[in-house]
Amino acid sequence: MLPRPQPRHRHLTLFPGYAIKPADLALGSQQPTPDVILLKLRIITYNIHRAIGLDRRFQPDRIIKILADHQADIVLLQEVDEGAPRSKEQDMAREIAEALDFPHYAAGHNVSLRKGRYGNATLSRFPIVRERNIDLTVDGRKRRGCQHTAIEIDNEKQSHRLEIFNLHLGLSPLERQRQSGILMRSREFTDIDEHAACIVGGDFNDWLSRLRALYVEGMSLHCATDSETRIRTRPIKTYPSFAPRGGLDRIYYRGGLRLQSAFACRHQVARVASDHLPVIADFELHRE
Image (cartoon, rainbow, N blue to C red; front, side, top):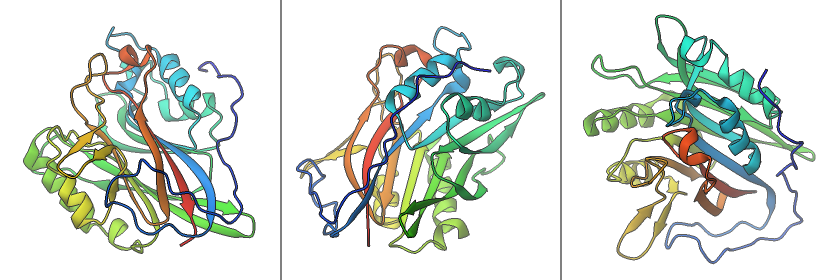
């Protein structure tokens, strides 16, 4: 069993009926603010590189400490092993969820190894009522996938559904474009009401932001991890972790979610725990 962090303070906060309009929202990216804030949510996406750090050591306790310090409500993980010798045959999704006291988690495996397998995993403070894995593999390349989970959030007498898409795209530009097209046309995505709260996050491997127009214009999403001006956008840089130059890890959103802030982890240990830095985004969920 992996070490447990100190008890966390729940990030969930209920609010009376008023709205906040933050000054640092991206220009032109927000709809009019609804009247009622239902709760606050912190979401993290993190490619943990199987908890094998840049020092080539398997140390999941470093990943757990980083996640514990940021106290997220929902965590999107990529490169999560299960039963693989390189990670001591651990079920990493279960071990990390238990160490952080997440009552709900789901693993979506994409790649089968000679022994074991790996893929994406989603951890949640709220019940996961549905989980499916969307196959994004193209042309016999390395298997890739997007894990779709539906999360049920109860607020007093009313429940709210949050749709989460946790993905890890391929290494070539054409492969990533085709994979994004598969996701955009998938039944899991097209069946969602356009006003429903939705997150698409993970490791996009999108060095030059070539996919941004597809997600923003084609899928009607906003990008939480870009800062916008009138002439350009700048992604939060996450790779490589020791000296970030590329914004590979991103969070897109739509529906009743309103972005409050987004940033990369600045902990020193994060520079060695994985080859990626985690990205943290704070949202308010509004009544639509």
